Length: 303
Image 1 (tube, rainbow, N blue to C red):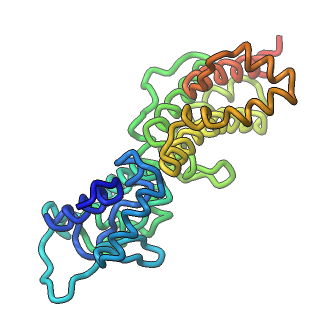
Image 2 (image 1 turned 90 degrees about the horizontal axis):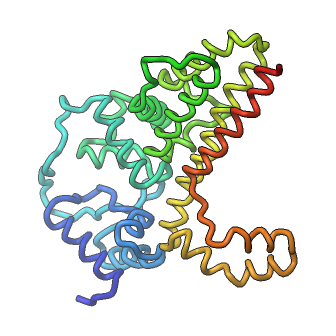
Protein backbone atom coordinates (compact mmCIF):
# COMPACT_ATOMS: atom_id res chain seq x y z
CA UNK A 1 0.00 0.00 0.00
CA UNK A 2 1.32 3.42 -0.95
CA UNK A 3 2.15 5.73 1.92
CA UNK A 4 0.71 8.82 0.24
CA UNK A 5 -1.74 10.78 2.41
CA UNK A 6 -4.77 10.13 0.22
CA UNK A 7 -4.01 6.40 0.15
CA UNK A 8 -3.80 6.29 3.95
CA UNK A 9 -7.15 8.04 4.22
CA UNK A 10 -8.69 5.57 1.76
CA UNK A 11 -7.25 2.63 3.69
CA UNK A 12 -8.71 3.96 6.93
CA UNK A 13 -12.19 4.22 5.42
CA UNK A 14 -11.89 0.68 4.05
CA UNK A 15 -10.99 -0.52 7.53
CA UNK A 16 -14.05 1.20 8.99
CA UNK A 17 -16.20 -0.60 6.43
CA UNK A 18 -14.51 -3.92 7.12
CA UNK A 19 -15.10 -3.80 10.88
CA UNK A 20 -18.69 -2.58 10.59
CA UNK A 21 -18.31 1.03 11.68
CA UNK A 22 -19.49 2.04 8.20
CA UNK A 23 -22.15 -0.08 6.50
CA UNK A 24 -23.54 -0.12 2.94
CA UNK A 25 -25.72 2.90 2.26
CA UNK A 26 -24.23 5.03 5.05
CA UNK A 27 -22.43 8.29 4.37
CA UNK A 28 -18.68 8.35 4.61
CA UNK A 29 -16.98 11.42 6.10
CA UNK A 30 -17.22 14.46 3.85
CA UNK A 31 -14.23 15.91 2.04
CA UNK A 32 -14.23 18.80 4.49
CA UNK A 33 -14.36 16.49 7.51
CA UNK A 34 -11.54 14.30 6.18
CA UNK A 35 -9.40 17.36 5.53
CA UNK A 36 -9.97 18.51 9.10
CA UNK A 37 -9.46 15.08 10.69
CA UNK A 38 -6.28 14.28 8.79
CA UNK A 39 -4.93 17.84 8.61
CA UNK A 40 -4.58 17.71 4.83
CA UNK A 41 -5.63 19.94 1.97
CA UNK A 42 -9.14 19.65 0.61
CA UNK A 43 -7.77 18.34 -2.69
CA UNK A 44 -6.00 15.48 -0.89
CA UNK A 45 -9.20 14.44 0.89
CA UNK A 46 -11.13 14.61 -2.40
CA UNK A 47 -8.46 12.44 -4.04
CA UNK A 48 -9.00 9.77 -1.36
CA UNK A 49 -12.75 9.65 -2.07
CA UNK A 50 -12.07 9.54 -5.80
CA UNK A 51 -9.78 6.52 -5.29
CA UNK A 52 -12.48 4.74 -3.27
CA UNK A 53 -15.07 5.51 -5.94
CA UNK A 54 -12.84 4.08 -8.69
CA UNK A 55 -12.47 0.90 -6.67
CA UNK A 56 -16.24 0.68 -6.19
CA UNK A 57 -16.01 1.05 -2.43
CA UNK A 58 -18.17 4.19 -2.33
CA UNK A 59 -20.71 5.79 -4.63
CA UNK A 60 -22.06 9.34 -4.89
CA UNK A 61 -25.78 9.77 -4.37
CA UNK A 62 -27.47 13.01 -5.53
CA UNK A 63 -28.59 15.29 -2.67
CA UNK A 64 -27.16 12.80 -0.17
CA UNK A 65 -23.39 12.68 -0.62
CA UNK A 66 -20.84 9.86 -0.81
CA UNK A 67 -22.04 6.60 0.73
CA UNK A 68 -20.66 3.09 1.16
CA UNK A 69 -21.51 1.02 -1.91
CA UNK A 70 -23.93 -1.87 -1.59
CA UNK A 71 -22.41 -5.31 -2.04
CA UNK A 72 -24.67 -7.64 -4.01
CA UNK A 73 -25.51 -10.84 -2.19
CA UNK A 74 -24.01 -9.73 1.11
CA UNK A 75 -26.47 -10.18 3.98
CA UNK A 76 -27.13 -7.14 6.13
CA UNK A 77 -25.33 -7.20 9.46
CA UNK A 78 -26.54 -5.35 12.53
CA UNK A 79 -24.29 -2.42 13.23
CA UNK A 80 -22.80 -2.19 16.72
CA UNK A 81 -24.66 0.43 18.69
CA UNK A 82 -27.66 0.45 16.36
CA UNK A 83 -30.66 2.32 17.69
CA UNK A 84 -33.77 0.21 18.10
CA UNK A 85 -36.99 1.82 16.89
CA UNK A 86 -38.45 2.02 20.39
CA UNK A 87 -35.26 3.76 21.59
CA UNK A 88 -35.42 6.50 18.96
CA UNK A 89 -36.56 9.77 20.54
CA UNK A 90 -36.66 13.40 19.50
CA UNK A 91 -33.96 14.17 22.05
CA UNK A 92 -31.57 11.57 20.62
CA UNK A 93 -32.22 12.79 17.07
CA UNK A 94 -31.54 16.40 18.02
CA UNK A 95 -28.40 15.37 19.91
CA UNK A 96 -27.04 13.45 16.92
CA UNK A 97 -27.81 16.37 14.61
CA UNK A 98 -25.94 18.79 16.86
CA UNK A 99 -22.93 16.45 16.90
CA UNK A 100 -22.86 16.46 13.09
CA UNK A 101 -23.25 20.24 12.84
CA UNK A 102 -20.55 20.80 15.47
CA UNK A 103 -18.10 18.54 13.65
CA UNK A 104 -18.88 19.25 9.99
CA UNK A 105 -21.00 22.40 9.80
CA UNK A 106 -24.66 22.94 9.08
CA UNK A 107 -24.14 22.42 5.34
CA UNK A 108 -23.30 18.76 5.98
CA UNK A 109 -26.45 18.11 8.01
CA UNK A 110 -29.03 15.89 6.33
CA UNK A 111 -31.75 13.64 7.67
CA UNK A 112 -29.87 10.69 6.22
CA UNK A 113 -26.67 11.72 7.97
CA UNK A 114 -28.52 11.86 11.29
CA UNK A 115 -30.08 8.47 10.63
CA UNK A 116 -26.64 7.07 9.81
CA UNK A 117 -25.18 8.34 13.06
CA UNK A 118 -28.02 6.69 14.98
CA UNK A 119 -27.92 3.55 12.80
CA UNK A 120 -31.63 4.00 12.17
CA UNK A 121 -33.83 4.13 9.09
CA UNK A 122 -34.09 7.63 7.65
CA UNK A 123 -37.88 7.54 7.46
CA UNK A 124 -38.13 6.64 11.14
CA UNK A 125 -36.83 10.11 12.02
CA UNK A 126 -39.93 11.74 10.55
CA UNK A 127 -42.07 10.20 13.28
CA UNK A 128 -40.30 12.52 15.71
CA UNK A 129 -39.36 15.63 13.65
CA UNK A 130 -41.13 17.25 10.72
CA UNK A 131 -38.05 17.59 8.53
CA UNK A 132 -34.71 19.36 8.37
CA UNK A 133 -36.11 22.86 9.02
CA UNK A 134 -37.97 21.59 12.07
CA UNK A 135 -34.85 19.74 13.20
CA UNK A 136 -32.64 22.84 12.92
CA UNK A 137 -35.12 24.83 15.03
CA UNK A 138 -35.00 22.13 17.70
CA UNK A 139 -31.20 22.08 17.52
CA UNK A 140 -30.99 25.84 18.10
CA UNK A 141 -33.34 25.61 21.04
CA UNK A 142 -31.41 22.70 22.58
CA UNK A 143 -28.02 24.33 22.01
CA UNK A 144 -29.04 27.64 23.59
CA UNK A 145 -30.66 25.79 26.47
CA UNK A 146 -27.20 24.44 27.37
CA UNK A 147 -26.33 28.00 28.40
CA UNK A 148 -29.12 29.22 30.69
CA UNK A 149 -29.44 32.79 31.89
CA UNK A 150 -28.49 33.23 35.55
CA UNK A 151 -31.32 32.97 38.04
CA UNK A 152 -30.03 36.08 39.85
CA UNK A 153 -30.81 38.99 37.54
CA UNK A 154 -28.49 42.01 37.45
CA UNK A 155 -29.99 45.37 38.35
CA UNK A 156 -30.17 47.93 35.57
CA UNK A 157 -30.47 47.72 31.82
CA UNK A 158 -26.72 47.63 31.15
CA UNK A 159 -26.01 44.66 33.39
CA UNK A 160 -28.96 42.78 31.91
CA UNK A 161 -27.90 43.39 28.28
CA UNK A 162 -24.29 42.49 29.03
CA UNK A 163 -25.29 39.24 30.72
CA UNK A 164 -27.53 38.22 27.83
CA UNK A 165 -24.80 39.01 25.29
CA UNK A 166 -22.19 36.99 27.17
CA UNK A 167 -24.46 33.96 27.50
CA UNK A 168 -25.25 34.09 23.78
CA UNK A 169 -21.54 34.43 22.93
CA UNK A 170 -20.76 31.32 24.96
CA UNK A 171 -23.46 29.40 23.09
CA UNK A 172 -22.17 30.50 19.67
CA UNK A 173 -18.64 29.69 20.75
CA UNK A 174 -19.68 26.11 21.55
CA UNK A 175 -21.87 25.72 18.45
CA UNK A 176 -20.58 28.04 15.65
CA UNK A 177 -23.11 26.71 13.10
CA UNK A 178 -25.89 28.51 14.99
CA UNK A 179 -24.83 31.87 13.54
CA UNK A 180 -26.14 30.67 10.16
CA UNK A 181 -29.25 29.08 11.65
CA UNK A 182 -30.58 32.18 13.44
CA UNK A 183 -31.17 34.83 10.73
CA UNK A 184 -32.04 38.31 11.92
CA UNK A 185 -34.90 38.85 9.45
CA UNK A 186 -36.48 35.41 10.00
CA UNK A 187 -36.34 34.76 13.74
CA UNK A 188 -36.24 31.15 14.88
CA UNK A 189 -39.21 30.32 17.17
CA UNK A 190 -36.93 29.14 19.95
CA UNK A 191 -38.11 29.18 23.56
CA UNK A 192 -34.51 29.54 24.74
CA UNK A 193 -34.00 32.65 22.59
CA UNK A 194 -37.35 34.06 23.64
CA UNK A 195 -36.17 33.85 27.23
CA UNK A 196 -33.36 36.22 26.26
CA UNK A 197 -35.91 38.60 24.73
CA UNK A 198 -38.01 38.58 27.90
CA UNK A 199 -34.89 38.95 30.05
CA UNK A 200 -33.92 42.12 28.18
CA UNK A 201 -37.37 43.61 27.56
CA UNK A 202 -38.31 43.30 31.20
CA UNK A 203 -35.70 45.88 32.16
CA UNK A 204 -35.79 48.01 28.99
CA UNK A 205 -39.44 48.89 29.54
CA UNK A 206 -38.36 50.68 32.72
CA UNK A 207 -36.08 53.04 30.78
CA UNK A 208 -38.82 55.19 29.24
CA UNK A 209 -37.73 54.35 25.69
CA UNK A 210 -40.54 53.92 23.17
CA UNK A 211 -41.43 50.45 21.93
CA UNK A 212 -39.62 50.72 18.58
CA UNK A 213 -36.41 51.92 20.24
CA UNK A 214 -36.54 49.13 22.80
CA UNK A 215 -36.93 46.62 19.98
CA UNK A 216 -33.98 48.10 18.08
CA UNK A 217 -31.78 47.99 21.19
CA UNK A 218 -32.54 44.31 21.71
CA UNK A 219 -31.96 43.48 18.03
CA UNK A 220 -28.75 45.51 17.93
CA UNK A 221 -27.19 43.60 20.82
CA UNK A 222 -28.30 40.25 19.39
CA UNK A 223 -26.99 41.04 15.89
CA UNK A 224 -23.68 42.27 17.30
CA UNK A 225 -23.05 38.91 18.99
CA UNK A 226 -24.27 36.90 16.01
CA UNK A 227 -22.24 38.98 13.55
CA UNK A 228 -18.92 38.28 15.25
CA UNK A 229 -19.87 34.65 15.93
CA UNK A 230 -20.43 34.07 12.21
CA UNK A 231 -16.69 34.40 11.66
CA UNK A 232 -15.96 31.45 13.94
CA UNK A 233 -17.57 29.06 11.47
CA UNK A 234 -16.22 30.95 8.45
CA UNK A 235 -12.68 30.41 9.74
CA UNK A 236 -13.38 26.73 10.44
CA UNK A 237 -14.70 26.25 6.90
CA UNK A 238 -11.80 28.14 5.35
CA UNK A 239 -9.31 26.03 7.29
CA UNK A 240 -11.04 22.81 6.20
CA UNK A 241 -11.24 23.91 2.56
CA UNK A 242 -7.62 25.05 2.28
CA UNK A 243 -5.88 22.95 4.91
CA UNK A 244 -4.04 26.01 6.27
CA UNK A 245 -4.56 28.19 9.33
CA UNK A 246 -5.40 31.89 9.20
CA UNK A 247 -1.81 32.69 10.24
CA UNK A 248 -0.45 30.59 7.37
CA UNK A 249 -2.87 32.25 4.98
CA UNK A 250 -1.74 35.72 6.05
CA UNK A 251 1.88 34.70 5.55
CA UNK A 252 1.01 33.82 1.96
CA UNK A 253 -0.42 37.30 1.40
CA UNK A 254 2.82 39.17 2.09
CA UNK A 255 3.21 40.24 -1.53
CA UNK A 256 -0.35 41.57 -1.66
CA UNK A 257 0.07 43.40 1.64
CA UNK A 258 3.26 44.94 0.34
CA UNK A 259 1.36 46.39 -2.63
CA UNK A 260 -1.34 47.73 -0.30
CA UNK A 261 1.23 49.42 1.93
CA UNK A 262 2.91 51.05 -1.04
CA UNK A 263 -0.37 52.54 -2.29
CA UNK A 264 -1.93 53.44 1.08
CA UNK A 265 0.49 55.29 3.38
CA UNK A 266 -1.97 55.76 6.27
CA UNK A 267 -2.80 52.05 6.30
CA UNK A 268 0.89 51.23 5.93
CA UNK A 269 1.70 53.28 9.02
CA UNK A 270 -1.06 51.49 10.94
CA UNK A 271 0.34 48.08 10.00
CA UNK A 272 3.83 49.14 11.05
CA UNK A 273 2.56 50.37 14.42
CA UNK A 274 0.54 47.19 14.97
CA UNK A 275 3.51 44.92 14.48
CA UNK A 276 2.58 41.29 15.08
CA UNK A 277 -1.18 41.84 15.39
CA UNK A 278 -3.44 38.88 16.17
CA UNK A 279 -7.15 39.25 15.44
CA UNK A 280 -8.67 37.49 18.44
CA UNK A 281 -12.46 37.19 18.21
CA UNK A 282 -12.88 37.00 21.97
CA UNK A 283 -10.99 40.27 22.41
CA UNK A 284 -13.00 41.81 19.58
CA UNK A 285 -16.21 40.73 21.32
CA UNK A 286 -15.10 42.33 24.59
CA UNK A 287 -14.08 45.56 22.87
CA UNK A 288 -17.27 45.72 20.82
CA UNK A 289 -19.61 44.92 23.69
CA UNK A 290 -18.09 47.59 25.91
CA UNK A 291 -18.23 50.16 23.11
CA UNK A 292 -21.80 49.23 22.21
CA UNK A 293 -23.04 49.54 25.78
CA UNK A 294 -21.19 52.85 26.21
CA UNK A 295 -22.96 54.18 23.14
CA UNK A 296 -26.36 52.94 24.30
CA UNK A 297 -25.81 54.70 27.62
CA UNK A 298 -26.03 58.04 25.81
CA UNK A 299 -29.37 56.92 24.38
CA UNK A 300 -30.89 55.37 27.48
CA UNK A 301 -29.42 57.85 29.98
CA UNK A 302 -29.01 61.08 27.99
CA UNK A 303 -28.36 63.20 31.09
